[in-house]
Image (tube, rainbow, N blue to C red; front, side):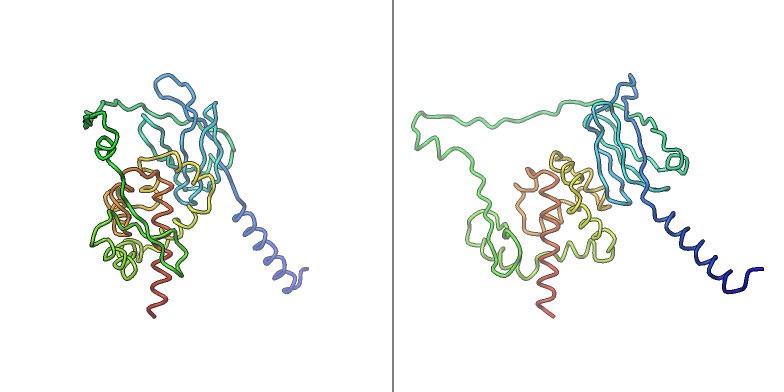
Length: 260
């Protein structure tokens, strides 16, 4: 007969083993195809919203990503409708590659307005007609940053820089101050090479809004309130936007500690 202390040891052993199994990293596999013809889709972006992990499909439409039961995968591909897929227990347990279909969007061409520049043939005159992006960034000694963007060179540019020093990210804090999990996601996104590679080739902000749980308007406003110009907001890729938001928040924390 087992003594009470032996029973206690056995229970502790079973408990430890159970925890180790529950914490084991798991992955799921899948194949993404075009719903219209079943052809595989290459370079489909897949992001695990819960774990902030990302990957893309290969030439055969195949992917594998770290995921646990009840995690949500967000799939997006240019010209196709983005979808979310929940990770089921069977998907994790049986390790089979699940086929996921994406539906093509009906895309309409938007009207493009081209501003014509009339050239005179005089180099000095023609150069002055070419629009120049005059966004300036100023470094602030003591802060780990590439600087603050203050917009066009104008009398109020310095005031914008000073405003950035004393109020760099209040809007950002209001957005995320009560959502610490979203700020953790922001840090994970910066540290994940796969996520960074996916964001570097995107300009639609979709992955950022999905992972940070904000809409496009609020995302643009966050960057604007962090003293980045409208030109930067309109032309930056998603990775640059991510770095701008992260940089702004880190500077906010530095300045907040300095005030205390």
